[in-house]
Image (tube, rainbow, N blue to C red; front, top):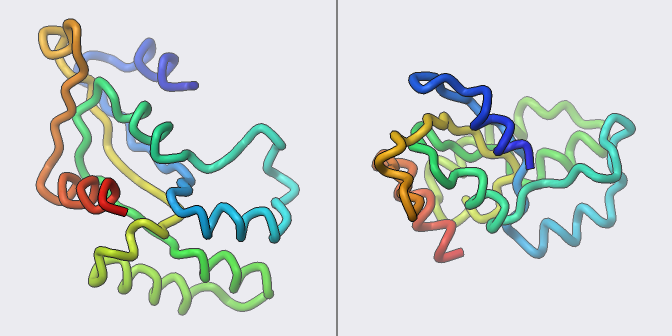
Length: 141
């Protein structure tokens, strides 16, 4: 993964704002198989699974984790509908109905390297309150 490269180039006091496609839902994974990929996506690219998402966060302080885009936004785009209303609806639903976070298709977060003393022999993940709640709901889902 590119995570090792991110760690190599990141300055000690630097941070990364990362936007990644995610797929935690088996239903969404099946939907992706039905709808074709866009031309600008290689066959090797795929949304991060829960395990891959966990690996990306390892060794970083995570803050500002926010989830976006329920699958119906992609379906609306595929059908040629204007996605603005669908995106606003998705955002509203994800902010107000935590149980839908399992179906989000994009994650955005800020990653900052943990100090070396926190990384000896184990990976410690520090989260702000919102990210902690989101990850707990992710684990339950």
